[in-house]
Length: 214
Image: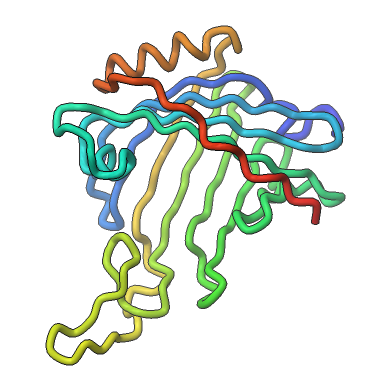
């Protein structure tokens, strides 16, 4: 991968915070922690390691499988692996492709197979070499009316479902702001955020999905 592309510039470690808003721009979670490591690997593969530290909240309880005490936060760890294609897009297979906008920005559009509607659109942009900002837009995408967790809503009397009148409307936005840190500082950044957001135990990353070869 040539020097100067977004992923070459973004490679390294980042620490920051995020805010999560609903479709009416009301805060769901005013702030939670986020630590990121982006690796550009041989052969055009890119690995994105992420740790999110949620303060005590419904989102933290859901992330923990519903078993979390109400005064405890939760850390989620994940790894994504994708492959750069000939057009310079980072392909994550079923999770969509990050398409280059220019040397400092990329975008990803994840679409629902059934409706063809966008589920999420994510935009990464670098400001200089030390600041990274990410916006992740979520949309109502199911063909039938559903609740926030995409479970179909049925008429209590008839059991019937209805077409989704909110299809394509904004469901929520997460905004992430990062500062570059030294890779050796990742564990310290995670520990600081676990303390700040009342997370008692570090998370173990889920196994990464294989990179797309398409």
